[in-house]
Amino acid sequence: MPAITDVANFIGTLAPWELAEDWDNVGTLVQCATATEKILVSLDITTEVVQEAEALGCGLVVAHHPVIFKPLHSIGVGSPVLALTSRNISAICAHTNLDAAQGGVSDVLAGVLGLQNVQPLGGPLRVGHLPAPMQPGQLAKLYASVLGSYVQLASAQKPITTVAVVGGSGADYWPQAQAAGADCLLTGEVSHHDALDATAAGFTLLAAGHHATEWPVTATLAGQLQAHFADAEVFISQRNPAPFKLYQA
Image 1 (cartoon, rainbow, N blue to C red):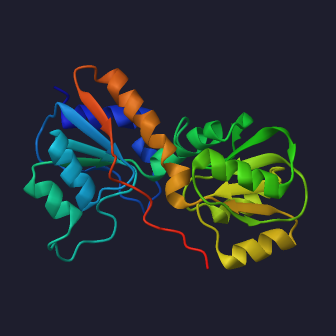
Image 2: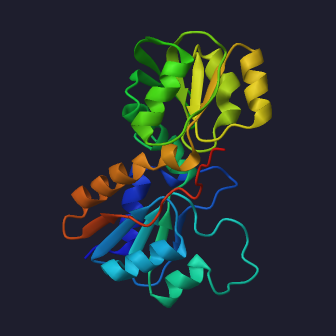
C-alpha cells in the first residue's frame, strides 16, 4: 500500500516541486490517512470529485489545480477541503511544476496535437512543427476535433508551420513564442487585448479552453502512477468536466 509521502516524492521526480512558481501552492495540501490502496487522478478537486473518490474507495486525490490556493479565511459547507477531511481523503497537487516539467502538461498537449520536433522555450512554453503548413482556420478546426472542444481563433491570416503551446492560461507567452519563430500559440484562454495585440503583430492565437488543454495530462500522470505503484489501483476522474457550456444564438 503506497504511503502518501511516497506518492508525493514520486510526483516530485516527474515534476520537481522546485519548478513551481513562487505564487503557487503545490505538494501535499491535505493529509489525512498515511497510506492508500487507491488513487484518483483529476484536473480539479471539487466536492463531486471527492464524492467520486469516496465511492471508489480512494484515500488520495492527485490533482493539477491546487485545492488550497488563496488563503482560507473560513471553511463551510460545499468546501472541497471540508469534503476531503471529513472523508479522510488526502490531496496532492502538482500545478505550475507539472506545467513546466519535461513530459508535463505542455509536452503532453504538444504530443496530442501531433507536433513534431517539440522543443522547450522556458517554463511551460513548447514549440513544434506541423507535418505540413496549414491555414489558421484549418488548424483551428483540426485542433477542435482533436481536443473535443471549441477553439477561438484570432488569425493573422498567414499560413502556419510552427506552433507554440502552453496548457491552461498561457496567452502571456505569445511574444516569446513569436520571437522564437512560432507562427501561432495555442493555449487555453486568450484575452480580447492579447488577441488584438498578437494579430496586429502578425501572430495567430488559438484558445481551446483551459480544461481541454490540460486534461490530457491526467491520463499520462495516472499511467505513471500505476506503473510505479503496481500494488495500488489508479483511476481517472469521470466527474471533472469542463465548467463551461457553450451556447450559440
